[in-house]
Image (cartoon, rainbow, N blue to C red; front, top):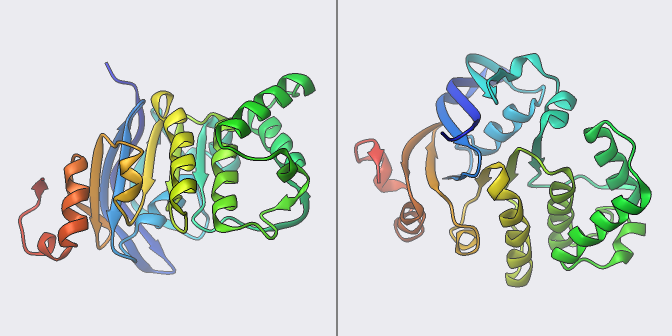
Length: 251
């Protein structure tokens, strides 16, 4: 029997009194890759932020469970330590903090144990090699002067080191050229077999490299259609208008 990682039930979310999510239901099991697509403003990024515990969002109805535990009981930090990872659409710049220091402190904090220097360096070198990253990046300040591709690779590097049980990837493919897209997808594929993955994207092109088990379409804060990879191709060809006039159901 598949191990359930994430369960979202009848989720309603507001920001300053404005409804954003309007009855979301979703279940992700370990080893599954789920993709959410939709127009700007559909609520996709809101969903990822709410699962991670962003304080700006108010859950007005419904529940989110991570491995059977209600996430209302966990702070943002506790969610990270429990195994939830969020890759940001727009990663923050942290001047004055070197990448190497940031990675070591982050991993040590989430694992809640001292890191052995030699073992961590080996782990770090392996992960950087998989993402074709040069060691010189470790002495740079976090995302300071980074290109879009460099920022996204650093996000995926963090994910490889943190080894999450639930990976939330918010438009990780945006702004990437062909080579960077391939490398980022390689990192996602490395984590996917042992985690639950939720990928938020506007484009089908990432799915040429990361093969989803399920594709969901969000309109006005709820999932209106679910299917397999073929649904992403149909959206690429036809857009979203047909979903607003056709009955709900699977593609």
